[in-house]
Image (cartoon, helix red, strand yellow):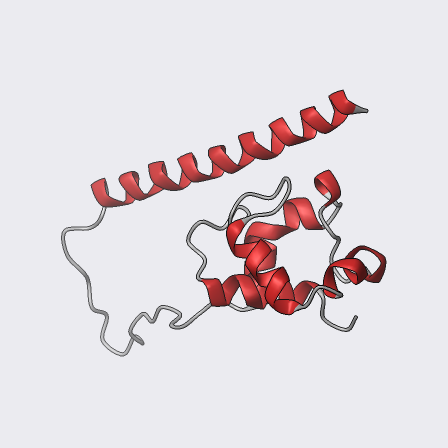
Length: 131
């Protein structure tokens, strides 16, 4: 059983570092291939980027789903009262603190290094929604 736990921990850490490395490489590529100018097409609507924080569902689906969908290394599963009940008894502030600072096998902010504290809180609220 220990070998399985260690293997899961290794895979979790590896995936976290791989995701961060991929993101850094992607940013480097974007900076090298950005366009020299822009083309304006008459009548076309200007591009808009989403402003503001991401929703809890967006953060969960981007960064939390890998562990929290199946309970990797004891991660509480999405909307699972049996998994979240004992944790929720400690209060939302404790859950948010653990989400931000990390807890047990979960690294700080899970695999969402670019998430704000409010986005982490929104993701936790999404995972416990309806419980």
